[in-house]
Image (cartoon, rainbow, N blue to C red; front, top):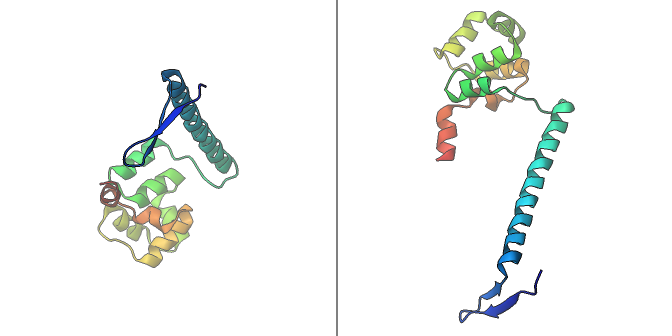
Length: 138
């Protein structure tokens, strides 16, 4: 790299002039740093998955959640449970699970906590909605 030339503007801001080659080299180095950070993040995620601390969720299930399908139904399907099995494990009736999944009932906090425990989720994973996600983004 060549020695950069610096100067102070009338308002006191210090500026540096670089050759085009030095500028492009700095840009490329910055891109490489970004790529390395991405690679390290992927490796960290893979390590969490291998350790059982995180899991991969196929796009088909993510898309169903984004499309507004009942989170209870989507996660139940993802875990490979029938409504009857989920209900039995959560200590509620299969009819109640059906009402929650179809939106006829919201489900009490205690019931949703029991469902979340069986599905190995945080409660937030069951009460998340597409509208909430959109309002956070927009």
